[in-house]
Structure formats: structure tokens, C-alpha cells
Length: 116
Image (cartoon, rainbow, N blue to C red):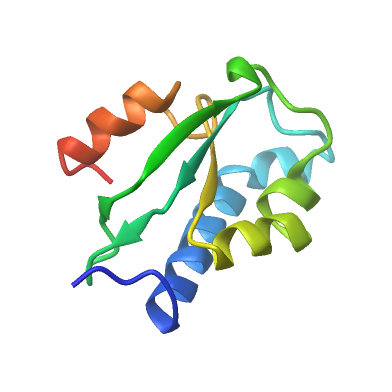
């Protein structure tokens, strides 16, 4: 059964943020910005009980894959990130922060292969 809200979705957000924070730990320790990276916006994302993506309505390559400056406190977290998540959407960073994920085509392939 797909779940989008409640305890499981909160756990997924915390796990995703934890993975992102741990991947940026070296950057944070050096007080530097993360390396330039693009983003995808995944609309209508749903997860199974094991937190695998089971469906999504649409994926959008944000800013044509280009880096968005000074965005981490708004796009991923903060009010915008929370509003997106509460509406059943997610913004994910692309390569190099998520190795192998360059765009929505990669995301679709990863979902189809059961990699995420």
C-alpha cells in the first residue's frame, strides 16, 4: 500500500535529509558550499512500506539541470521544502550529491529498476 503522509513519510524525509547531511559533512566541516548540482522536482511521489518509490505523477528537471545558488535553506528545508513535501512532492539534488542521478530520465530508470 502506498503511503505519502504520516509517520512513514516523516521517516522518509528524515532519512533523506540524514543521507544528504552526511554526504555534505565534509563540506560543512570546511564551511564551504556544496559542489554545484542540479535538482529534480518529483510531483505526486508515493512510497511503499519499505520506503521505495512506487509511483510518481511527474518529474521536472529544475533550472534545466543547472545549479541553483543559495537554496538549501529554502528549497530542501524551510517553508518551501516543507510545503512541497506536505503536498506529496519532493526536490532531490542531482549528481554529484546523488551519484548517478543527472535528470528525470535517470530518476525514471532508477524507479523502474527498483533502485530507489
